[in-house]
Length: 349
Image 1 (cartoon, helix red, strand yellow):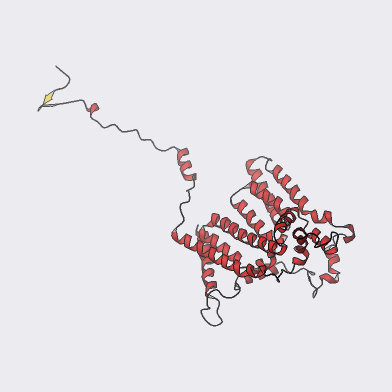
Image 2: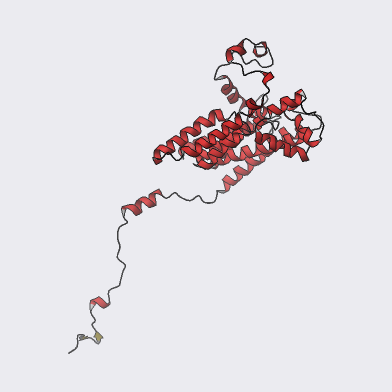
């Protein structure tokens, strides 16, 4: 007698040999669930409308750059501060143009004391006319600033926010007028944009590099970026419970301040000392009606209000016909709507 019994001609086999085998299922652990939640979603390809908006903004920025910079390459045009900043570099392009020790050459040499800027312009002026080198440098820095602003804002809020930031900066004629010329101050907006990018992406190395290069090129942004960087590094050290982040920051600060003091250290003694604000108020050169009416100091909100008002100004001639007589150019309304949409999407995001 076997284990299998015959029933209607079919052999009966044990149930254990016919049941389908399935892998045991277990619920995900708490650690696995937390890992799935904390893993950020990788960005995919941009949508078609994002590509169109980005390309349109890039074309508009190039149009603005052409309108603003192309006339500056004319042989008989020069930026107003070129006489005390740019012209000394002609001695690299044409030796003997300015005799060493001449007053204007001496003043320009101290004015351009930040070593990185002076080395860069000296190198460019060796091969290119000094004025063209300065204008070309100004154009490159402008486009680089636009690109960094777009990346920094786009990484934080998406394509529309990045485009809105680019349009706001490129449209602001006040920012252009105060930084054009290929002077040290031309680099100011670029350093602020790089600083913002370093903070947004939490890149501490880039943050410290911006401080050092800023000190050796155009030290003024250090007044804002320095304390902000100190706060970022201090918070990082507290969160990590270690003082190690403070060491590279201290080293970068010493280098930046050392480069920034180049003008003071190289100034001739016969030029005198730096005067105080109270002394400046008594000097006729700083009074209202003079070339630099900086005393008394204006209200803190004066320049921010002017900057906001300039955002609504047209960029030269209207790029699109006005919708009605006396109305604003149609392009202003288009970009204004784009800016509003970008802000709304940033809030929703």
